[in-house]
Structure formats: C-alpha cells, structure tokens
Amino acid sequence: MYLYNGKIYTLDPKRPLVRALAIQGGRVAAWGDPDDIPPELKSRPHHLEGKTVIPGLTDAHIHLEHYALGLQKVDCETSTRQECLRRVAERAQTTPPGEWILGHGWNQNVWPEGFGNAADLDAVAPHHPVYLTAKSLHAGWANSAALRLAGVSASTPDPAGGRFGRNSQSHPDGVLYESAMQVVERAIPEPGEEEVAAAIRRAQPVLWAMGVTGAHDFDRRRCFAALQLLRQRDELRLRVLKSIPLENLPEAAALGLRSGFGDDWLRIGGVKAFMDGALGPQTAAMLQPYEGAPQNRGMLFMDAEELFEHGRLAMENGLPLAVHAIGDRANHEALDAFAQLRKLEAEQARRGATVAPLRHRIEHVQVIHPDDVGRLAALGVIASMQPIHATSDMLMADRFWGARSALAYAWKAQLEHGARLAFGSDAPVESPNPFWGLHAALTRQRQDGSPSPQGWYPQQRLDLNQALLAYTQGPAYAAGWEDRLGKLSPGYYADLLVLEVDPFECPPQELYALRLQATMVNGEWVYQN
Image 1 (cartoon, one colour):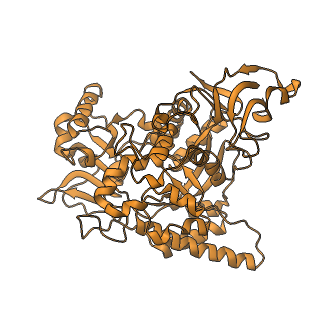
Image 2: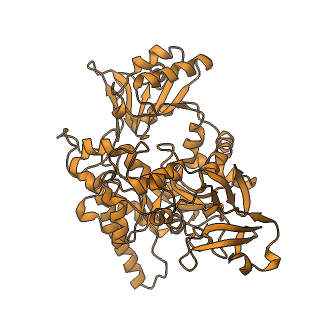
Image 3: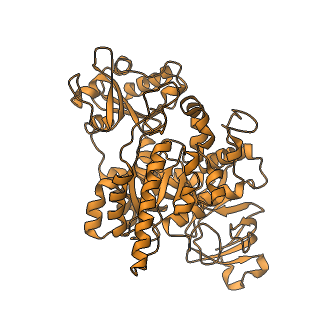
C-alpha cells in the first residue's frame, strides 16, 4: 500500500514529518516525499487528501476482559445516586427474575447522597441479585439477594485486606471494600473463555475507532486464555502485552515463562503486584493520614521486603515487576524494593551475568513524596500513568490529600527527572479513548474547562509531543517492542491513525473531540469512518 499527500508525523527525530509512506508486509518499507518512494512500492495508492497521520496509540494499562464485558453492564457513572438506581431499575425490567444485574462506574464522592446501601438496590430490583463495582474497582455495592447468595451475614468476618461496610447494628450494609468484593464476586456465575474471547472480539472495533492499536492488559488467567484463542484463530488485531498475576508467579517460574515470550500480537510482560488500594475509597497507603481522617493512612498490602522477595523470584526467571502503587507510602515501599532488586542485578553482573536490567514499572504513581520523585528515573523504573485519572480525581485528591496533590499525577516531574512515561487509561475505570488522555495531559482540565484556564497544578502539563511519546514509544519500550513499534519509520509496523484534524495545530482544549478517519493495524485498515 502507498499512502501519499498527507501530513505524516513519524515521531522519529531523524525525519519527523513526511508526506508519503510505502507499506509492505505489514511494515513501513519507505518514507519521505512522494518522489522518494520507489515506483515498485507505489501499488494500492491511497490519497490522504492532506489528512494527518500519526502512529497508532497504545493503552499501557487496561483491563481488557473487564472492559469488554463491561460494555454489556449497567453504566453507573452518574452524577447522582438516584440516576444510578433508575438505570438499575430499567435493566431489571428486561432481565429475567433471578438473573444477576451487573454494573460499573459509581463514585460516591461525586454523588450528593454519598454511598448507597443494599436496601436502595433492593427497592429497585427486588427479584434480582445486583452487584455494581465502583469506578475505582476498589469497592463494590451489592443488594440483599447478592449478599445472601454470597453467604454474607452479620457474623461474616472481614477478609484479610478488605472489609464489609456495616450499619449501626453491625449488619453488612451492601458496600464492600477491596478483598471483600471477592466474596460476592465468587457467587456470580463466571463467563467462560469463549464468552470472554467473544467480548474482546466485539470490543476491538470500539478501541480501533478511538485510536487504540495496542494494549498492556492487567486482567487475569481467563483473559490470557481468551486472548490466546483469538490469536490462534487469527482474530486478534490489537498488539497485547499480557501481565502475570502475582499469585501465578510460582507456576510461571516453574513453567519457565519469561518476559518477551510470544509473538508481535500477544506477548508475556511482567508480574502484576499490588501495594495498596485506591484514592476513592481512601485505601491508598499514605505516609501521613488522609485530610480530616487522622486515624486513616489507607491499606498497605505488602512492604518493601515482601515485594523484594517476590521480585527476586521474578527476576531469577526473567520477569519484571509491574507494581500497583497509588499512595505516597506505597510508592516509597515499591521504590525501596526496586532499589534492592537493582543491587541484586549489579551483584549478578559483577559475577559475570549478562542479562539486561529488567524493565520494571510502577502502575499509577498517583501521589509521591518529594524525596521519591527522582527515584524512578534513578532506578530505571517506568512510570506507567493514566492522565485521565488526574482530571477525574482532582477534587478527591484536593479533599483527601490536600497540599500533597502538588505531586499527584505528576507526569512532568517524572519526565524532567528522566523517567520513561507509558500512558494508559485503566479502563474500565476510565474511558480508553486516548484523545481524552491527551487532552488531560496537555490541559490538566476536565472537558468543561474546570477547574481553571490554567488547569489543575498546571506545572505538570505536558506538550503534545511528550504526551504522544508516552502513548507510543513509552509503551513500546516497556513491552520490549521499541525496535518495531511507536514510530512510523522503515522497518516498523504500519500501525497508524488517519485524523481529520492535525492535533499539533488543534487547541489543546479541543483534543478530546478529535475524530478518526481511519485506523490501520499491520498494514490493514481495521476501521474507516
């Protein structure tokens, strides 16, 4: 295929802007002006009519199974609790009695009414078990039928790493925090691998239409099995880096799975570990208490020593760590563990080992202590962050973290210290639309322009080139694909987007509204508007 007469941003500093690309075998074969392209590479010409082309964008943190299945759930991301309940009632009218009603997206922090309870859901869906996950995915909301099916009663103890919300009589009130969610989730009939594969197949066009051509997935074994089914059938048209849950590390080590195993469609990444919870339910682990809650410093699920022990086993088997860390204490403990792992790598190097340093990453890095800001760069740890979290969470961050928010979602600070950025969405927590993420990265504003013309902590804003690199070359480096993905250079895969508007000439405040004309993956059009 031959693309010509367009503005093609290659993101390659050797030749950042060209007017033509020749594509052969799924890769860029030649670039430059139309006259630079050899005649034999000009078959299947496609006139771009002055449109803009950029490399395809990768979501470096997504939950593919949850997102794909969530497209069928009740949308609970509402401005009031009452509207959420209305939507559940509407779904109950079309769902056979006794079947589960599932939903996602509620956030009590934006509801004037605050948290709901089981009785609220009982009133609108008396004949169904109902379970709704919070926007953060760190809390759940269940009705009485769901609690009964899960065997939850007043005598049920809180599980390790979680708790049941309780009323004044100590009865479960329907809200579940952290690991308590799993008690109810185990009672929900699980979809099979084929059902998950079908959901991901249906979700792919939705993602292509947003500009997503690659994904780093952080769901579990069933999602991996579903992705393998799609790959086996040649139906996978996203480039997926697949993480391994920490609980499966011993099995992965025993099997000899290493990072990089797979192909250029589906590849093993690192081991996903959790240090803490999330900001919304105030379970992110903090060095100092939450504002207005002097007894609450969140939940630390493991300390540096425990993470180091897991990391040592992973490192011995060629697997980097991808560590969920939201609060400043969680990030501090994770960095202490990475410091020990780097020392261990150095010791091995002195003994003659030739293994390259593993590409560890921290997922989220949502708030960090000033003393720790430069440590990701110093330790070679990738900052895997989600710009859209900043604009969604800014009011909560101000409320619960106060002045500490100056180093919350601090992408520019990480970049200035020399850390590599890899941007994603954490979908279904947020929309996977990368142009919403680009808008947040450049403006630090919500789409309505709040909180101010300068944005929230505007010193952390990025420019468009910096943000695009975090959606392209940053994820490619994290995946070990930096020699074939992230730019439109000869030899690189022809994963690209055709845009109606040049984002470099578009006001940053309008980036969220950018629309795609077409998406190409591996030299084939997968979406055309």
